[in-house]
Image (cartoon, rainbow, N blue to C red; front, side, top):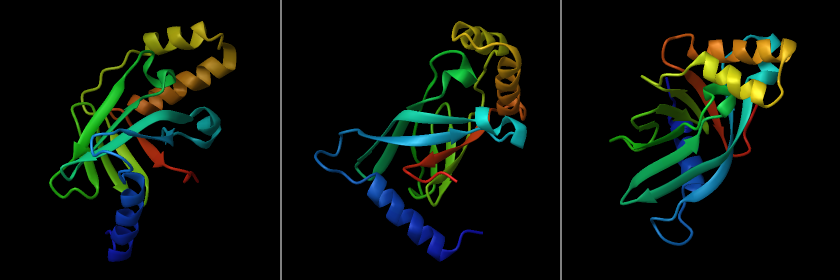
Length: 160
């Protein structure tokens, strides 16, 4: 259950993150961290930097865009979406649904189809092999385990 204090904190954070500095249609860039839920032995391979998170607000609707790490997809997959009617905690788009509380967003990618072989080819093209390749592929397996890939997006400087 989300408390009023949590909603207030989230509103303050989103107001800061999504505040407009020039024009309503300008995309604001920010960094974020992305994590795939995985066992502790995979944690060093399950965290990624998102350097291209873009947000904007226009006519009271907040929008976002970012690219999923290629280590999880094997190819370029841009995710985008916008706030739903409540405008406060849920963003959704064709590729993703984010539920955010206190700058932490649980993300699901319904219907996103990924190919393990494509990911393996990408990783080996980066000269990743042996035990590390196995662990990175285990992270991919955790990412897609539930059928629809999912992870956690940490906004701003917040990352536990």
